Amino acid sequence: QKEVEQNSGPLSVPEGAIASLNCTYSDRGSQSFFWYRQYSGKSPELIMSIYSNGDKEDGRFTAQLNKASQYVSLLIRDSQPSDSATYLCAATSGGSYIPTFGRGTSLIVHP
Amino acid sequence: SAVISQKPSRDICQRGTSLTIQCQVDSQVTMMFWYRQQPGQSLTLIATANQGSEATYESGFVIDKFPISRPNLTFSTLTVSNMSPEDSSIYLCSVVPTGSTDTQYFGPGTRLTVL
Image (cartoon, rainbow over all chains, first blue to last red; front, side, top):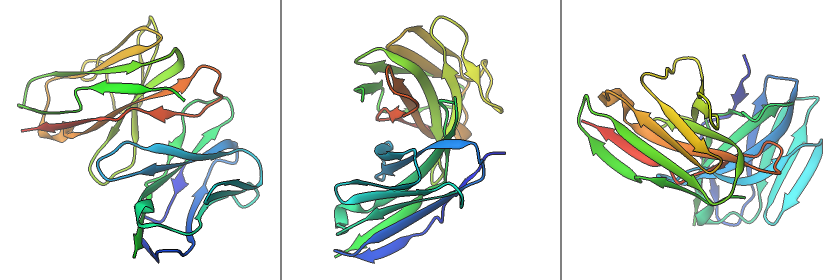
């Protein structure tokens, strides 16, 4: 059974710090990885996708992928209170449109 | 990405009734899906909405309880039938836009409360 694991948190960081969110996956055939942000009462919003080992940067966000360790992370630099949300990690196996979602990590950025 | 709308955004329903949720996309999409997200939980896939044919349901979900239609490439409906309080949840439509590999985008969701 394919699984994506995340620490449910909450992860609490001070404003301006780096928030590090982690995710592991069980299916070695996973090829596509996604990070979604979900504010309370809202639907998930895609932040980043990553397909290759290494880092991918987009503004304050950096996704990191290590397929050998089956590990994906999301770094948020200069965290802001508006970043407070639940972050969902998802992984898709080759040829599938249907990702496996983690349960999400709650991030709290306090002023 | 695609612009996705859902109607209604929220509803409160009585036990035993049915509710139909609509999902409209502003462009043709390859795939459309329906998810459920119960309070404090992650996303659970209900089914893949197939254009012009019966939906493909995930384990634990059946057509009699969650009938789905997708008459064209931009529109789908999900009906929650014979509702019970356990059906209280957020129901989300998601799409994979044409030209995208496997990236899903979510609609705003429908918050359903069953009394």
